[in-house]
Image (cartoon, rainbow, N blue to C red; front, side, top):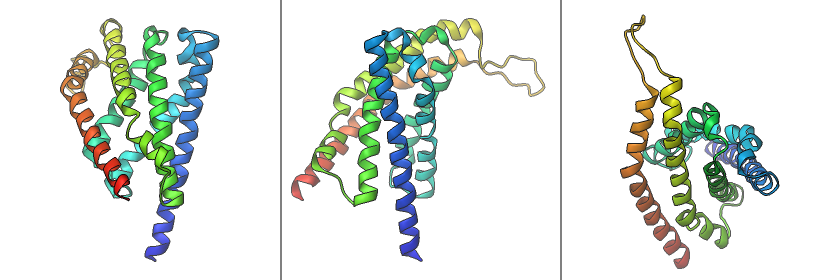
Length: 221
């Protein structure tokens, strides 16, 4: 029974990882193609649907962590996925005013390169039980460049959206109402920006420590 459940787990995670890999590969292809042929102003319209699908699929990773399908700590998984979903749906999807900015290109390309490497890494581990050394190196090294680019793009896009959030009052709940509750998306965006300040260096240091452990272990093997 344990062997069957283990096989079922590996099969599910293999399918999940390779399916999302294909989604991010499509995002990267469309982003680069559109950037080259039409300019950064048209990148978002080209990648919108596959970007939303691939990024929203990451919600399952929170479930995987909670039920113990993977060893990733929920404390690291939840903030990263939540921030990306916020960018994908609350900022990019909801405010067309920022969709034509060049930061959308840097965001989607840095995200997609990171995720293509990550999902292929985990996909190969589930299928073959291990990964080639070059993929291990890419998994734990490309973030050195991609993470600062991605984070800078995220912060920049939230900042650019602030005046439009304030004027439009999208996702805001005003009192009086039957729930006696108010919610202001403008201040949520400011709080999100505030979290990036201490949160980003902390996560970067965590990834550096993980890189050191992973590459040191591969050398010993």
